[in-house]
Amino acid sequence: MNVIDISDISLAKSGVTLQHNLFSQIRSRILNGRWVSGAKLPSTRTMANQLKVSRNTIIQTYDQLVAEGYLVSKPHSGFFVSLTLPDQYLNAPEGKNESALGVDNTPNSGLFAPGVAEFALFPTAQWNRLLQRHSTRISLLGNQDLQGHLPLREALHRYLTSSRSVVCNPNQIIITSGAQQSIAIALLAINSLGNNEKLLVEFPGYRQVVKVLDTFNLDYGLVDVTAERGLNTEYIINQKALGVYLTPSNQYPMGSSIQTEQRLQLINWAQENKSWIIEDDYDSEFQFDSRPLRSMQGLAAESGNANHMVYIGSMSKVMFNALRIGYMVVPEDLVKVCLEIKDALSGDTPSHTQAALAEFIDEGMLVRHIRKMRRRYEQKYHLMKQCITERFGSEWQVVSQGAGLHITVQWQSDVDEHQFSELALSHNIVVRPMNYYEPISHKRSYGSVVLGYGNAPLESIVESVEKLAELYFELKNDNAVDLAE
Image 1 (cartoon, rainbow, N blue to C red):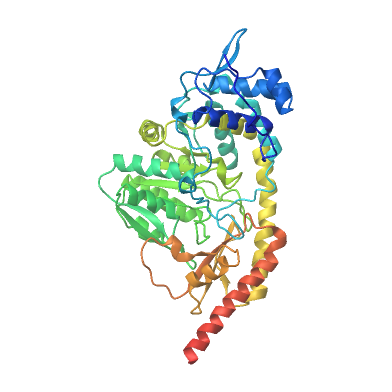
Image 2 (cartoon, rainbow, N blue to C red):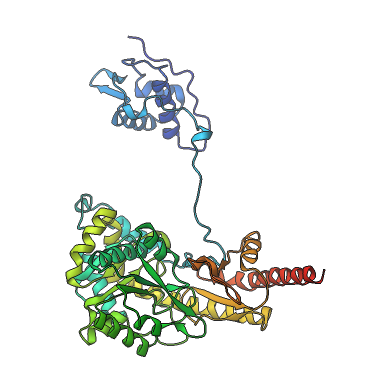
């Protein structure tokens, strides 16, 4: 039997490893029929000598081709092209097909993008060590507990009890793929138990909540949140509603909080009307102007009224956005319904990441990181506020409290917030217009934008706010000229 001629193989520098380069060339020749089924390849020693590479490189390449079904190894005979090729690779193109290339839709997480944590200070080395430790655990490779990895639920129970005064047990905690999934599960679960009454949501508010409501065609009403009054709790307690979604620690995007007296009013309203409260404890870890209030769930549990409370949290802001792990604390009689919905939406949550997170919490890394980032974000907040005051004077008013990862500003001039946002983006600055958070058309007497400082480098803040001031006053002057003409 003739041995395949390999004189046309070249391993010139290609930006990939020698093994990968050789593997790709052999596979290509097999798939396009140049190396026919049953043909014999040169021995590993012969090919290594001809290509002037180490024999180990050839051995590893042959082994990979055998593992993927392109070659077969016959003892004492050598390597041969497989008679039956892997079906999924038949007719595979040799190179990139431009028409088959995808589009990268990654959101812009750049300067002043709201809702993005600072990544540079995250303890990546320690986190990777934990991931690596658990990635070799065979027991985590199969299907896992739909409710979530038990050690993580137990770790979160300890953390939430001590840091947010949440009253629960690990069997009430459900691990999700982030706050967004928690919100969807909570809304669908509550709606399935409801009486055709509407759900109430904050306005302006977290846009993803309305996306869920619209997607599943759930009826909802809007509750005003203003800079002057905060959440209109009086409106809520005079409504007969299935439930209400709230961000009481740091309302997004207005940046207000619900005080204890208002919280008690809402808890009493929920109890009297058998209505639900979904408490999204957004940004509760990062309070700068005052001590954080205890969770509404914990407050309700004090009086035995937590049976209509759903508490939601996420690791995206305290760790990093791509982690995609959230959690929800629900009454015990709601667990089964929530799990049925989670099972229908996504099934269980990746187990190795859950195991690493459980250890991250138990070793005290999470608390240490939060403390460090609280100081960091407070420093950024005060610098942002100072720069805005210096560059805009009385033109801009900061209306959000000292908390979280964003600042919300308002102005009374005729500068259009959308036009301002687009102009800033052309200078690589992300500015979120307020009507992004308004699901219906809404006339306002002011313009407003949200500036996220979480991932903004501290050393870039002064220069960037100066650029925003330059752009803003440029638009304002242009408008004045147009009016004069």
